[in-house]
Amino acid sequence: MNYALGNRQQLKWIIPVFAALLLAVAKPALGQSNTGVPPTVQGAKPVIVEHIKIPGEALAGNLQGNAVDRDAVVFLPASYNKDKHRRYPVVYALHGYSIGAEQWTHEIRVPQTIEGAFAKGAQQMIVVLPDSKTIYGGSMYSSSVTTGNFERYVYHDVVHYMDAHYRTIPNRLARGLAGHSMGGYGTLRIGMQHPEVFSSLYIMSACCLSPMGTRPANPAFAKMMAAQEKEVESVKTPADAAHLGFFAGAMLASAAAWSPNPKNPPLYLDLPWKNGVPQPNVLAKWAANAPLAMIDQYIYNLRQYRAIALDVGDQDGLRFDMIKLHKILDNYGIKNSFEIYHGTHTSHVAFRFQNHVIPFFSRNLCAKHCQ
Image (cartoon, rainbow, N blue to C red; front, side):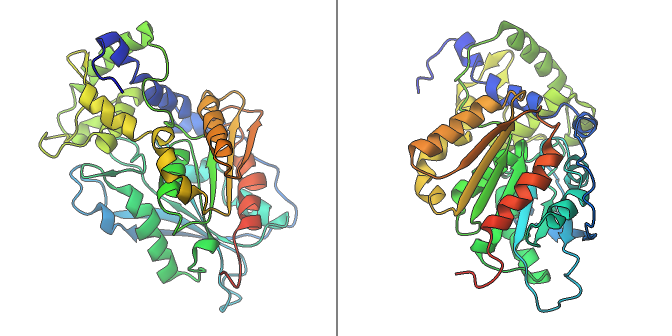
């Protein structure tokens, strides 16, 4: 990649990540209000809902001051307290940017959709919603001294906690990973690197897949970048970020995750532009965190998965990168299912979770004699 580029050409590197974040969810309330609710399934049995804290050894010492002990919501089948000897497969479902685990429950309408899936014949399983919301709205499920190692938190700390405190089947063949938007990004990122932990992946409308620099420059975007730079300059401490708009917050969240700098207090990050000038070294770090740029390195890992599913709405701007991901997997001969359904980024996520995500894991996670 040639970094000796003019400022205008360099600027276009920034566009895909933030366009994707803006397409993902402008506000939590907006995402929730635009999420349809599937009809209640007659005869569905109530699942057990537990709100817990999961310690994050991987997050200790993060410079941003994000909580180390994290909220999580756990959904246990109705049979969990009746059959004390039964063990269950587990699905870990990752939320998107600007929301946490609790808000995620409203977007995917759980426990109703889990109960509906079970009533329709899906095998019983445990569903876990870990929380990765940070001061800036999201961890990007990445590893950063500034934000904390949320990548390891998910695949190690959360999984180990569940195996130690619940009757899980502690085997990769009984573990699935799913996520929507930023959570879809996290599912692919973590899944590519850790097939020893999970055996099935369901990637929903993933954001931030493409390397920066794959889309043409946009003068309107450049003007908006200048406005965001001015807004970000008002942030003197991480706590100040609470007053930022969505776009500026997304900028800081991405910078904290992908271009941390322990020698640059008080925010401990480097932004991809300075005084209106794109910063090539920072942009290179951001591009290196794009899954479609690194996926070729992890093809052997992806071939170890029992099943991979992708879906996205036909009115979701993220569909173009999801199509690219599907084609790459196909080109390498990696079996995957891919569906473009009728809907926006958030309109059908609850329907998909009940009628597609849970049944997918029901078919592909082992429930006994996992070898």
